[in-house]
Image 1 (spheres, rainbow, N blue to C red):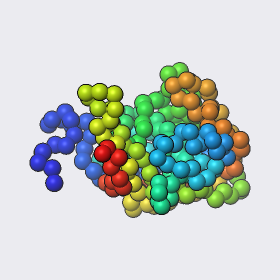
Image 2: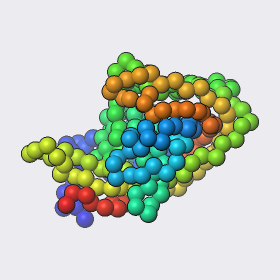
Image 3: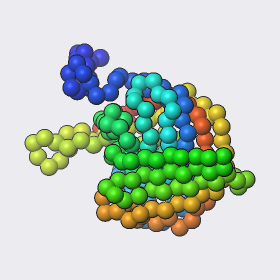
Image 4: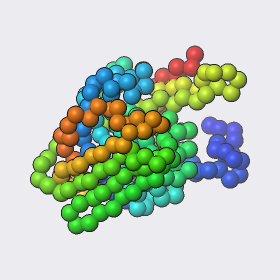
Length: 237
C-alpha cells in the first residue's frame, strides 16, 4: 500500500486518475500483415523473442471511457515471448491526449507518442490514419468483405517499462510487465480487406517493418477494462 494520497503527479491535481479504466465502447480496425522476421525482431525490446511473422497494425476510436478523457489511438503489435510466456508486445503506439500518453507509459510501459489520429466510416468502408511530425505513418482503408482471417496470439501484452536515471546515462526503472484486458466484450465483428500505406519517417520508422503481404483485416466494436498488470521480472539489479 502506498503511503501517499496521490501516486500520480502533480500533487493534488494528477494528470490521470487511479485504475481501473472502463472502455465501454470502442471501434477498431486491425490489419494483419506478414513482415520480415529480422525487421520485426529488431523492433522488439531485446529481452523478447519473435514468435510469428504475422503482426497487427491497428487504429482504434474510443466512444465512451470511464476514467480517462476520450482519445483515439493506433499502433503496431508484434507476437513474442519472454522466457516461457507467449504474448505480444505493443512495439509502437500513438495517442492524441496527454493523460492516455502518460498513463500508458508510466503504469505499464506502453511506448506511446502523441500524434493526430483520424477515424472515419461510411456504410461499407472505414478510413483511419496516424500522422506525426507531418508524416502519415499509418494509413488504412478497410472494406467489408467475406474473407476471414485468424489473428495471431496477441495476449497477454508483454511490455518493458523503462525509465531513464536522473544522475547518469542509464535506467532507474527496468521491468518486464505482463498486462491483460479484463471484461472483454466483442459486440460486433466484420471481416474484410484493407489497403495499407506507411509513409517513411526517421522519427517513426514503421516503413522498416518489412510488410510483405496483407493476410487479412477485421473491424470490431467492443468493450473492456484496463487495470493493473504484474511485474514478471525486475531487470534493474
